[in-house]
Length: 566
Image (cartoon, rainbow, N blue to C red):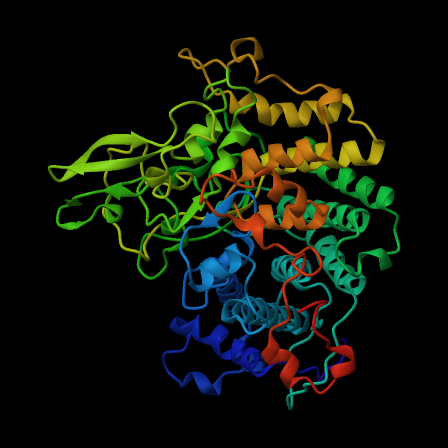
């Protein structure tokens, strides 16, 4: 919608107040209510503060709160599950949520609040004459990058959505229609075309949480890959109306991702686990864009505490053990049992893939004498169908940690975990490039193989001399050949590399592969292990429902209908 009097849901009206209050250090002399976008954003300093507030609000997409939207796109896949029997985590894990699920409303409204902030900043920066052209471009470029990121997440989750491109003014309008998927992507592409254009955002790595031109180009490549694969899969309504052919879309994704691959200066770190270490956040060569969290309360995160390897018995310094050990978490989210097997090309390849060793615990920690003392393992063999079920329920994900060893301790609160959310990294670019290369050609080229095998080679780790382990040392875990490559294998490699990075739901949705991978990880019939394969309904669960409260408020029922079969 392109009108000066666009209005939207009442909660979004608070976005300007929230934006101003996030910059309170500038507002000590007068009440906040006297400030509006027109009289607060008067120069580069105030606009820069607004940009920081916009990035800060994006962190709320990954916080753990009441009705948290975090679990919407992490659970219900082939990698993560919840072993409890009720609550928001259970609802998303079993695909049993309703149209009135509070977390779905929170997902919707928090994204639109960020859109509102971005629109205010774009409008203000466009009008201020005191800015240089370079200053104006950076502010608008960053705001458009975040707006595109937010709309991209919304359109993938809900399909058709209302578009808001200008600041909200005047009375509230409940008559906004849901815009076609193709129109939403038109805005996303336009925003990222601007943000990635020459002389808009810097090309150098910022290391402070601000997006640069290469992050914008990588995100645009992901957008084109999503449009192409979703149109090809034809599981989600609306993508067939995109005018370009799938070949054209895959080719455009290939071009953008090749540019990032060849010219951005980004590179894989030699050791996989180093990407996720606290000391390497922002500064490593692999990260393209991260949302910032700090150990200073309340600027930390809680989402990493959902994972971890849980302890058995005892406390450490009088506290529950998961509050102190650098690998132990609450273990609310565990991996789907058969996901472990994704790292086992054969029974003769024990832990050749170092990503498994880093990402997935296969044990629980036994606490004795006020300290971690020993481990009890799940698996008696390398066959993931044979396990100690009691232990399995206590084994989680160790991808995000505060130290290198399960014996290390680090005091922290639930809300001061300093892990950033890595939104874009170079390994993702290489895997997306390989997928686009395979899809546009019908077979993978040598350049595409080189990209995906670069990720696979790094997964073997380094030997005692610091030299990359070669394929001849890891029988059963070889480099790919062209004959090995299928879309299923590419998605399997993406799961091994990118698991628990808030990617999997989107990957399975865009490719129409939920049924295939959920069936692949269905538990053996002779166990009571449960996971999401039991209730996923392909007739509706490729999209989430529009929050019922938004349907109820709409005065444009003909153009604001619920998603199919909800």
